[in-house]
Image 1 (cartoon, rainbow, N blue to C red):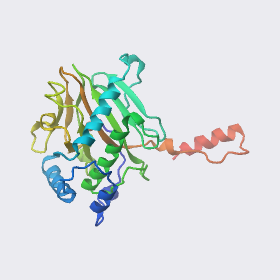
Image 2: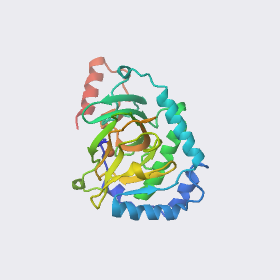
Image 3: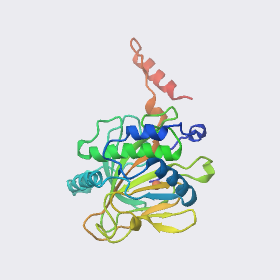
Image 4: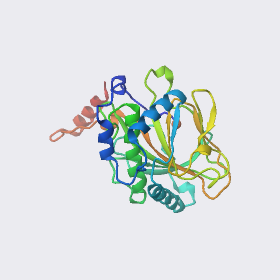
Length: 294
Ligand SMILES: [Fe+2]
């Protein structure tokens, strides 16, 4: 993922988690998602330390096996049902998001990436074919927020600074699906780099033979995360660390994974003329133009 038009306010990012926020988080996670053997307080404390020191953390067996299986089945079924003619698909979404836009499934093959990507927005009714994945994405976003230090529902709604989050489910196809190495945050921006999570639903060595998710950690080591991640694990990492999807090799499935993308809606997409009764057409046009002038 490249930069998605973030618009953070440092004062929000530095906010300390409220006392009892982990208890509140627990109450808002669906039953059956998190492995019962996981102590959420210890897990979050360990994740913070690991991410701070290495730039990434793999939460082993965070999700229950049944829950994970449901997500994997949904993803495989969804992409199996795709029309094989990629010309019928729009370009995969990347970059500016307008508030209220429709969910989309796109495809792209160029010098930067080769991918099928589904994007689901909270303002739309959840895609019933992917409802388990979407629910998981929203829940893990809350856990990510607590690790990060914001309120647990940060990005559930469009915030005052236009920040929000949305679900991205991707398929990097066999024999060449990839995403160039990139960073999502620059240190020079002087903001706390957002933590991403990823749930891999197909696995290197099992579903495909080569490639996968790589990250350069804070010790400057190139880590093939997909070599380390097994079903039910969740990856957390700082978007400021260089990361990529190396070309996917042969196998039964490509690389399928989902996460909740931190993004911003375009300011213009939130503007509207609420009153216009009695306005002449030219006056409506003029009024609309004036709202665009800062
Ligand atoms: Fe990215």
